[in-house]
Amino acid sequence: MRKSIIGVIASVLLAALFSVSVLAQVPAADKTAGGTATAAQGKELYSKELFDYLLKQRTAQGAPDSPEIRESIREELNTREVLIKAAKAAKTENKENVKLEMDLSSQMVLIRAYLADWLEKNPVPEDLLKKEYEAIKEQLGDKEYDVSHILVDTEDEAKTVIKELQGGKSFAEIAKEKSKDPGSKEKGGVLGWNAPSSFVKPFADALSTIEKGKFSAVPVQSQYGWHVIKIEDIRSTQLPSYEELKPQLQQRAQAAWLEQHFKELRDKAGV
Image 1 (tube, rainbow, N blue to C red):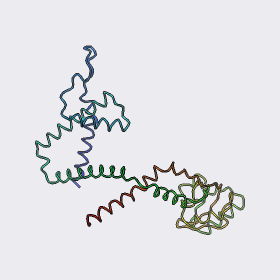
Image 2: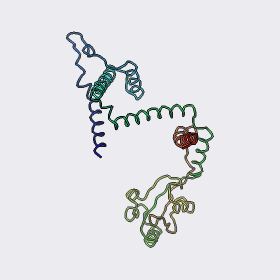
Image 3: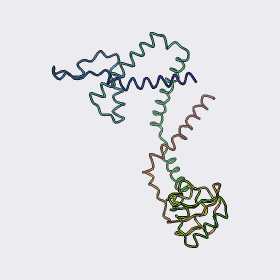
Image 4: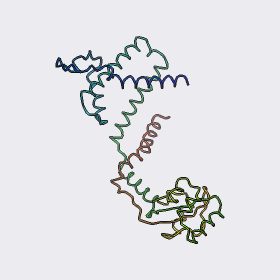
C-alpha cells in the first residue's frame, strides 16, 4: 500500500512539475532591447533526436508547432535530465525494486512496438471482418422497434395496467405513475428504437407478437418483473454499411487476432 501511494504521489508531482515548468522558467521577451524569450535560454541537456521525437508526438496529438510548445518540451526534457542525473548520483537505479520496475517498463515499450509492427504487417483478414459484420447483422435481425413499457412487480399489477389501457388511459401517464423502471419512468415508459437483441429474451420474443401502435394483451415476465409493452413503430434495421463499420470491426477483431498470435508464440516456446 505504501509503495503504491508513493508511486501516485511521485507521478502527480512529476506531472505538476512538467506542466508548470514553462510558466516558472520562460523569461519574458525583452522588448526594449529587442530581445526574445529564447535569448535567455540556458544550455540543453538532451539530444536533438529526443527533442524531435517529442515534438513529433505532440504535434501528432493536435498541438501546433509553436515557440511555446518547443519551449515546453525543452523545459520538460531539461528537468527530466536534471532529475535523472540526481537519481544516478544517489544510486537510485541500484535498488532492486527500481531495477525490476525499469525492466518491466522497458519490456512494455518493446512489446507495444512489436505488436504495432506485427499488426501493420499482419492486419486482420478481410474475410474475418466481413464474417464479424454478418454476425452483427444476424444478431440485430431485420427489424427495429420503437418501444415503450411499464414495469411492475406482480402479474396482477400488470393485468390492472392492461385494463386501464383498454379503458382509454394514457400509456405515458400510467408509466409515470406506476412503472418501476427508473430509466424510462419519467419519459412515459419510452425506451426508443432498439433491436430485439437489446432486450432480455422474454421481452424480445414478445415484440414480434405485438402489432404496431398496440400494447401487449397479456403481461410479459422477465427477471426484472412484469412488463406491459407497447410498440410505437417498426422499421427495417438501420445498420451502417460494411465500409462505414470497418474501422470499428478492426478494433473489435484485433483482440482475438492478437490472442491467436500469442497462442502461436506460446506453443512455439512450449509454454
